[in-house]
Image (tube, rainbow, N blue to C red; front, side, top):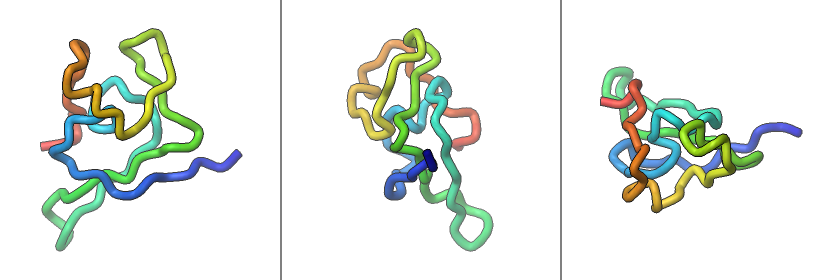
Length: 77
């Protein structure tokens, strides 16, 4: 099955796809070649959380804001 990507997510949103432990595919979008603007994240099949025994997670899960294991992805400013 081909990986499907979701719409662009803001880099400042505290959701699963901006977390270090989210293992779905993601791409970075840069504006004018230098400024990071957004993330394009995998949504189908769902990504998984490496910190929570590899359970299925939605890329836009708002619960990440309260997740005790949330760690901002190292590629984000």
